[in-house]
Image (cartoon, rainbow, N blue to C red; front, side):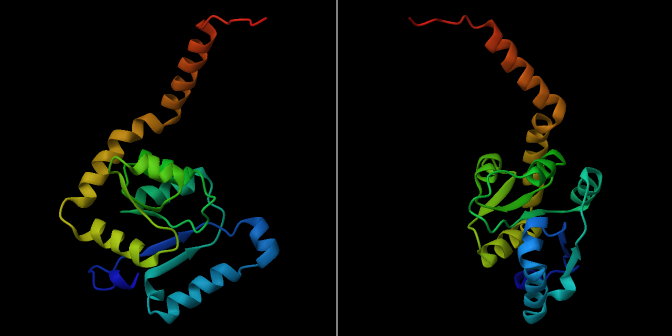
Length: 176
């Protein structure tokens, strides 16, 4: 975020969603509080907004559609997939994400930038590129728009239907 402070208008960053119930049960709001304290310490608190309530599909979709860039800074190396990633690409949004498997695969054609886990400087640099390099965001939006239709439920359902039809049509063999 410090890398983005020189931009005008000043970008805003929304930390969306509530703390996972299991995490809150074990740790309370310690992680969220740590983020707020860190933002204040490095002078970017005015750029952050915390929406710490549950976002249903409609609310999440509205938030993603309002974004210029969707950032998925997952700390866990065990993160495999992300519904927000799919939502962002389906909405035609550029994405900056840490290197979890789904992001590496889905963003490899240029709809986003993948950065190392727990590397705030790399996230900041990627965001800076998306927000300032001529044509960068537009190229990413175009690629996301190309990929998006295949991620929507009707297309996914058709892929499953075609797979099931193909599997039913294959002859089975019995080994003795």
